[in-house]
Image 1 (spheres, rainbow, N blue to C red):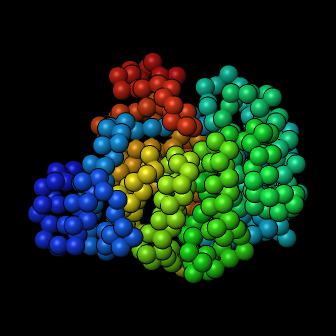
Image 2: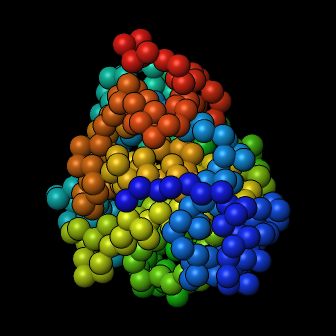
Image 3: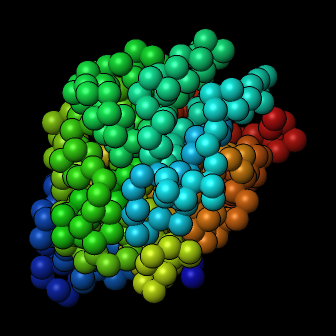
Length: 386
C-alpha cells in the first residue's frame, strides 16, 4: 500500500459530505477541531483524505524533518503486581520464577556497556515489583548520574510511580520532586492505555486510573520536566474512547505545555488474555496516526514506534502525520517482541535509521530526548556515519 499525497485544499474543496468538508476547512484554517469532529474523521474520512491532511499538518510543523535518537532500554523486571489483560510481558509476582529481576549492579553493567558510545538517552520501564520501591530507584538514578551525568534518564510510567509513591507514603508532588532531584529527567508515555473507565475496567482495572496518570504528568510538568503520552488502540475500544483519551491529553497540554510527543501504540494479541481480539489492519493503523496528528494540535511531535509497527510500516506512517520513529534501541526491549510485534530483535544502527528515513524522501535528524538537534543527516554520506 503506497500513499499518494494529494493537495489537501483540492481534496477538501471537492468533498461531497458537508460535515466532513467543514472539518477539513477547520484544519486547513488551523482551527481546533472538536470532540465530535474527531469522531467524524474516524467514521467518514477516507485513508487518502486523512493522510493528505495529516501530512499537510506535519509539513507545516516540521517540513520533511524526521527525528530519531540514539537510545537504549533497561527493563528492571517483568515481575508485576498487576495483571493487565493486554500484557504479554509481565509475570505476576506470585509466579516470579518465570520472570527476571535486575539488581542495581546488573543495571549499571548495562549502562557501562555504552561507555564511549554516542547514546544520549536511557529509557527505563518495567513491571511493578514490590521490592523495587522509591528508595531503590532513586539509588539507581543517582548511580547512573554519578557515572554518566550527561545521559538523559527517561524513566517510569505513572503506573510504576503511583505504586512507588503510595508505598513510600508521599504525595505525587513530593514523589516527583524526590525522583527529579535524584536524576529523573523526563517521563515516557506508557501506562495510559485508554483513559475511559468503561474500557480501563475491562483491560487494566487494578492500576492507576486516568486522573492519577494525568496528575503525575502534571506534577512532572510543574517541575519543568517534559513527558510523552501514549494511547493503546485496536482492541475493544470504540472511536469515541480514543477521542475522549486524546481530549484529556490535549486539555492537560493546554494547561502545562509539558508534553513533547504523542505515541499511538498498536495492540498486539500474542500470549495475553486478549489473544481472541483481532489486531488492527495497517490501514487502520495509518488512520489512527492521521487522526492523531489532526486532533492533537498542541502536541509538537507524533511518533511511530518502529519496533512495534515494523520498518516498512514505520516508513509508511511518515506520510500520515508522523515525524518521529524513535531510536536505535539496540535490541534492549522485550515489551513488544514478547507481544508479537513485527520486529522480534528490535535494533537499528544510525546508518540503518538514516537510510530508512531517506528511502521515503524524508530528512533524517538525530535529536536529544527534548528534540534538541544533534545532527542533521540530510546530506550525509553513509560511510561517514558512525
